[in-house]
Amino acid sequence: MTLSTYPLPETLQEVPRDASIAVLASGGVDSSVAVHLLLQAGFRPDLFYIRIGMEDEEGFIDCPAEEDMEMVTLLARKYQLHYEVIDLHKEYWERVVKYTIESVRQGLTPNPDMMCNKLIKFGVFEERVGHRYDYIATGHYASTARVDGKTFLATAPDPVKDQTDFLAQINFKQISKLLFPLGCLTKQQVRMVAEEAGLANAHRKDSQGICFLGKINYNDFIERYLGKRPGRIIEYETGKTLGTHQGFWFHTIGQRKGLGLSGGPWFVVKKDCKRNIILVSRGYDPLTQYGTEIFVDKFDFITEDLFAPEGAVGNKEGAQVVPITLKIRHTPEFVRATIRRLERGYHIVSETPIQGIAPGQYAVIYDPESRLCFGSGMIVKGK
Image (cartoon, rainbow, N blue to C red; front, side, top):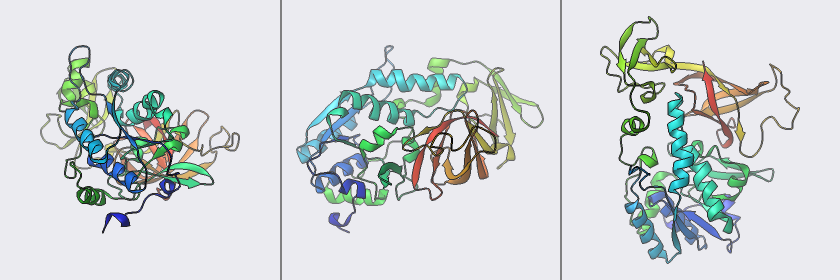
């Protein structure tokens, strides 16, 4: 397969060739191929690297960026493109890192990648630089779709790499300006494009984990800011004390490893944050891991409120039930479910049990075909 046979997303084909485009280049193969495809299509984008990696006020290094910036520099030189580094470390620390720490402190399961997209990449960057451009392009595995004249966030063809769940907190203004050149490609095809184009990072390993941590261990990071507070590990079914932990904030619902218990496997099924207690169940697939109901206080719809126009649903129990598909974490699988609006918040019921529903996670909802992403809301309770 040659480069010319790789398709461009339909929404990208509609963009005027004289449009100004800013590309958020990370140094990875995905954003580099996005740049290459834009050039193939006749655009001359400007490249921007968002630097969030430096030391905090106490000298704590969170994400070394030198190698990433070197990769973007090589890309800019290869294609003779304008390139700038935008330092948003302070904003990232104030808006994303502090959100992560505070969420963990409250016993919630945070999603810093989702907040980074909403608040930094398509938030502060837009305020600082992006407003000067017609479009902002990224190397995300996602796409957009036009339905009844409106732009919707849509899934990518590679279910394993699809990143719409990380983008599900953005708003309509943001999605209307975004371009996803990889929207028709799988990861394997992206690697092939990179090889054919001779990109320096064609075989570079994908980054893993939470960006701002870099090579720092997650528990070491949490301990630095929240410390330790020993508490009991209790068997959920019997109330028997099995051991101790160093603080509920080191553990998440559904966690299996790192509990230090024998005779397992053991899974964290609940946390009592007030009493600093971790509740666990034993077995390879204990039913206490699963739930079918999710409650969300506030839902952020990206393009269109599923329950609009106002008054069409009503505020009573038994109001309109909308079929959807659902994710609560980054996985290839979608779960069939329904959602309805309550007097306060929303109630989601899945057709099949979902493992590890945890407050603080985001319920991301899609149409029944798992094509259009409607938006997301933070989970307050699951059962």
